[in-house]
Image (tube, rainbow over the protein chains, first blue to last red):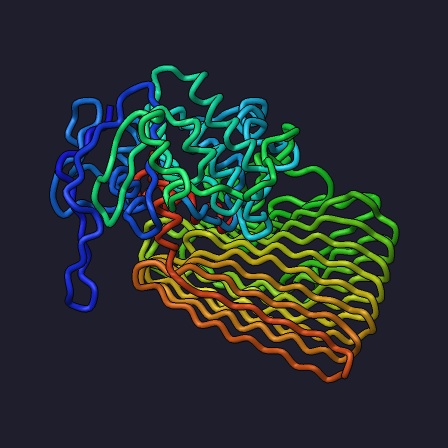
Length: 251
Length: 308
């Protein structure tokens, strides 16, 4: 279980203090898929970075499974079971897909194990395992590899920062399937997704709405969702195309 | 049978991946003496007269054979210049593994300057691997100044892999190449300097024949207060294709100077240069840390990958 207690985060911009996260208190319970939504610039990605330890809060506490992790760095939080999928995947010259997966799992894994993670995101392991995670991969391929490395971590809490960014419509349906299967496979895990895509909100157990850095609403999907339809907090990937219809397992 | 001591074995493993005496043709030089040599039916190795060094003659059409000519220095204070000439016959396809390992525990400098010339016959293919390595706790420097000259005839292919990752205090590498029609040269240099080391790498490639091509790529890391200079010049003297790339990471107070040089002397010469120098990207470190690595471990993974 993740608890944020009176969390605030500000930056100094040209001498003026700007508050990006304002006094947020919320809980991500175990066994839940929670989606954080809200208009752009509302502080969603910053909140994800605060949870992963990439940014440090100016005040407030973060408690994970009963332990105060506010002062822990990125590495220690990762080792305690927090995984973080970047919105913009990072490229590495010379580091191969298999290397990243091995680092994520924390030990040397067989190619067949790597295959499992890659096929879950619709990539053929044979074609990708030895590829470098560099500019030769497309944005969509990088995104899937990013998600595969996060799956490989098998973490207690996985945070996805706008997972739909940079992937095409076809892939989007499969992304939803990945989240659904993650939820089904790992009952004792929690998933926190930053997204304002309606289809992702539709698979949430709970929805949190952030606006101007403050918590506006938290509740179960059936209660919160009707309030969001047609607002900037629940946008459609592509109106009227029926992205899910007939989508195959290919991304 | 060649007898090798532990230091010699360790150095050979570092520079030539050799656990024992290699298969095929070889010459092992240790502390200025040949301690083992073998020619084969197709590859003849003989000593030069007048100067220190070897002549390696590879018969035309020799396929899938290798030549190992590693050099190790285990005594402090040795300074030597060695001239090795390779004559590679037409249509041959061979692997040549050179390299030098210096273990210097004394207070005098140890220096090996290897001058290698390759005469590559028509349509021959050569893969050349040269690794440098230094170890030892002495205050004496470990110095390597290799000179490589390549003369490629029509349609020949040369792939060079130059690696210097640890322990060499001072190095000046000069590589010159002249390519005939349709000849192809590929160079992959990987270099890491640390502490107060200095490394200079100079390439001078002349594309003289129609459709000759060269691709010279250097990846380097400068740590500590070390400094490097990468100076790559490609001259296009015919319709040809040339590309050089210098991609470097600087850490701590490391310094790198990249000097691109392209010279087009023919209207159909196509020449490109790319250079990038910078620190490890913060987001790369963060990504690996979110996978559970410490910052130091993340740095190591990034450097290892970069220099792979």
